Length: 216
Image: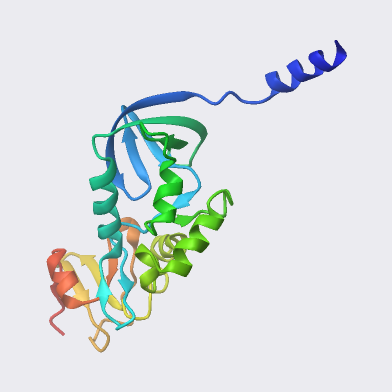
């Protein structure tokens, strides 16, 4: 009887994990709207939509946009069932989700090299990540910056996301101007992501995003 009472107290002390389900709208590689709930998938971290990777041949490519597209093709409009685990600093529900076949979405994305195991919060998918890296599946066929480090450098207006992305996209009274190394104002230009400013890996990328070259 005492054991049963103790077990009841333990169960009451643990937070309840809420289940919910709904049709999915993919926001990016690790963020979905499931029904009316904005979900950050538990235990994984995918590249940001504007993040780039570098192939073994040294070619830059838009791996973040590719991941978002791949995940959207797989899960957009699909019915998912999720279990709430937490809430993040942006008010998103952190949840583990499965599809109608019972496949763990986080596990699948890490196994296929579309996301990394987010070890800061869980080692649940660490072995799946290692297997994907060894097989060079998905992102692991290229060199890329850890998504968390990419976000950190961008939010702090710090160094570029990698050594090849050194073009500064500045917003001023003259509009959206990009500065290349060697331009007169390059060194004194500070990138402030909170204002919508950003780094670019090529002039073509900057122009496509709506920036124009500095006149000096």
